[in-house]
Image (cartoon, rainbow, N blue to C red; front, top):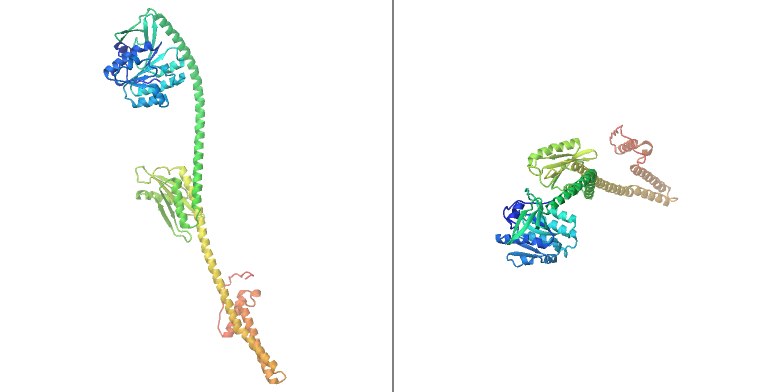
Length: 552
């Protein structure tokens, strides 16, 4: 695409009023390409422009590549010399020139030697074309005027067409019977009736003068025929371009369909990747939440996980009492303003009653945060409260955030349930340990009491009975009266021992317990005690009392 600039009117000139009039002035940003037979036809135009630039004090830069213009420029004062070999020594020639031109003053003249003289550094024709297509727009942007020479016979048609398309002014110079002939082939943005007519060029005292070649003059008919041939060629090219454009349109339609499918697949891919990343993040925070069974640590882990998962700076957990756990009101980060608290409280009630995830959004001018998401915490089928996150923008007011918060609330509910079960298990363990300790203590006390009862009661009776029987045995055959007396006393004490033994056995397991049950055994035991101690005892047993298992 050709670029043009119309600023700084009247600052630049070719140095020839006639040539300026033909071009309707040279403008800031113009790149002027002379398509000639060689540098000799190019030199007069360079000399004219240099003389004008120096007289007006306009910065002038000579881009020296082969030295073919040294005699015109090297001896002149006020001309800045850029040696191409030196630029190439800095690395890439193209980049070095761009760097140097960017740092140089704007609104300057640039004089280039023939483009073919860049071959030592840009050996391929395509390299030279790319350099031109880089430098030409740059000098346009710098609002400078550049002179270029394109030697006929050294470049292919495609290269010439590319250079012509990029530059602002393209001039054809030829030698004929009229001498040097000038014919503008392109003057971007300027139009005149005779602008593209061939002109004879004369140099008088260093000044370029031009005159149109009249119709019928020698060479004019040849010019007309050349234009007719060129028009036919252009018509053929136009028809070919139309056919190519039709094919391209079809290809573009196919590409548009492919692009639509690709965009849909890209959208699905991004959605899947986003979901995978969310799931991985949810998995990580779920591990962190479930890493502790201490209820207070679980509360802290839930809030920290919510803030990290949604990349927010505020989250809250509201739970009513459950089991032996007191109510929970925890907040991390900035608390919403009182104006927003009313809406939050209403949304909290709705989320708890309806057991669904809600999100809210406030105007951007409101105080932070401006969006929130609320999810119910359901434990063993009972809604205990809500988990909430707040953000300083509207990112939480969407379906994706609500779904992700719902998953996090489910993980939080599981972690809380585990912590509650762990606490309940600890409490039951403590109760069981206390019961076992009490049972062991009771067993030990009963065993000690039984040992005392046996030692102080039953054993003493048996010992006393044994002593009387032993005494009776000793008096046997000596004194029947003493023998009879000791024997009777020993038998009496032995009967008491038997009774005491049965009493102790009855205390351990009452008689009739296995055959008639606890109620009958208890009634018999109480009646026996009442008879022995002369007590008045009334025993009432609930008829609805279920029988104990046989093992008890």
